[in-house]
Length: 331
Image (cartoon, rainbow, N blue to C red):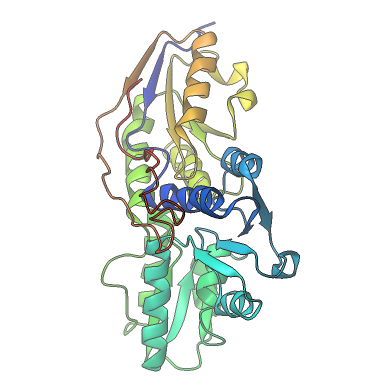
């Protein structure tokens, strides 16, 4: 039976700028204010990252009532609703907002257009924290659609001023299909000047489209809760390549590689490179002899940190930057 021979690494893969920034916010808050630092919801949807930050002194909570008065609280990269923001302020926490700037951009757009009298159709997954945060920017007038069927059922109060917004981590192709259905039903709908799906989601999906036809099986490193990682696995499968998603190398099964000599490997935007390396080592142990990185876009984007975390208050010195994981890496 053929064993795996070659691993082809997707480029880009793994951490995006928003994830790098969110993790750095928690790490710097711990460094500056000491443990514990409270984080509302998982900072990013990755088990390894969350456990690593727990070990450093982060406490992850869902309810603000679980945070003691006067504590430091970080909002996760997915963003929060106005109600959560207001409750946190009312409780007097010291707040650092790790919401990805590309999610904040959608929040700002919603607030601006709502003032002009717009209602919204939001394309996204029910129950996802990003969707709850964006929909929670308003107390009414924002309607969730998860698929084309939902578009036929949605009932906005008026259609003269209707705008569409999107969760940033959707399948680009699925979102395009749903957007087309929205346009067909509401021809005067206003669409974002630049798509809401973020650069990292787009780039990782584009890389899988290039990777999948060249390999016999695709492995996606990502946690089950990670929307963008799930989309990568679905996309590879849709393109006709057997695909599996793993949270860690321990989940790999030898049977997946029987008779499959070329293995494609990618990682969701919240999955650290150390997990990719562990998966490579495990596939090498099963027989792979070479690792090759495909040509792809090099991401250089970096988001600034919030005020108050850039300088060490005690020494007045700049706190050392984490080396971002985005960008090329050598294997």
